[in-house]
Length: 333
Ligand SMILES: NC(=O)c1ccc[n+]([C@@H]2O[C@H](COP(=O)([O-])OP(=O)(O)OC[C@H]3O[C@@H](n4cnc5c(N)ncnc54)[C@H](OP(=O)(O)O)[C@@H]3O)[C@@H](O)[C@H]2O)c1
Image (tube, rainbow, N blue to C red; front, top):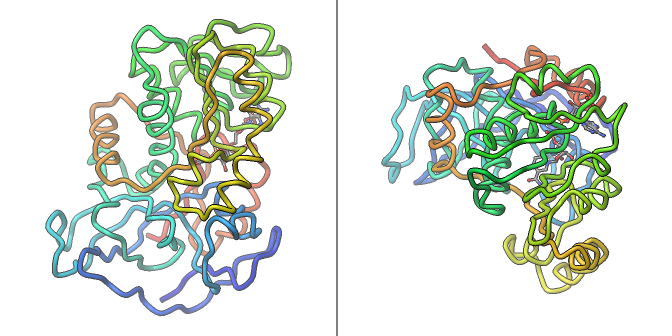
């Protein structure tokens, strides 16, 4: 089958378009004919070799972490899906490879595609939707009446997280540049901080939750926004011991993660707030719940540009400008 492949880790290296064997279909797997995928900064980081320690892939590797497509075959023990089902998924981290004609995934990681979305829009959802869910619902337990700051509201994660936080009943503040103020307002943000004109750390206070997806300076200044007992949750690092344990990393790597996060944990403690890192995981059950919110019109996909499959390298370059509004989608149809 045709696929986009990483042969060796290289910063900004182009993906090779080539032939790879069709994936093996295990007992609990569904084989999906890929109709659309979306790009994530994670794809670029894996290609660059940044995740070598945490995700030791065997090369050559088919890249890609989001998919929507058609089930064409199921393993002998699959109960929830049948050929012909339209599905979407973020495959498990050790079974990525959506930039291809087919991918096999455990049925537990897959959900039926929301009926009101096309394949391209559906492929834009899984990784960012699950990330927002696992931060705001699972980790922060964001509740009605609370205040949440979502950084980078116009990005893939931010655009979804604003809508989810509003659905949970929170008051939502977000940071963005002047060009994207109207977009984040349309997604429901109550307070918009244009980072070109204002400093969020001086403007906002008394928040319950901050979702950080930006740099270390933003992470540290976010402490000023939180009230005592508040929660600072980062998805852009630094990783902590809880993450290392959850992902089965060995004792030595656990100590490395403890060291990486030592500074921010100490500062958070001084502010009387909690710090933790989330690395999202595949979860078909959560994707079904997200699908229900999408079908109810509560959450809408935000797609910036759509590229054809052969143009994935061009799409990766656009991703790496860091300026995308919502998601970048690739269609195979
Ligand atoms: N740990 C996890 O499980 C996990 C999961 C998903 C993502 N992530 C990480 O989270 C980060 C964000 O991911 P993403 O998919 O949302 O990225 P993205 O869609 O590529 O983010 C692009 C957006 O970021 C905004 N942005 C850039 N600098 C900003 C700033 N200083 N203040 C406010 N907004 C800014 C840009 O808006 P402007 O043009 O207006 O600046 C743009 O709309 C990445 O580092 C990614 O690797 C981690």
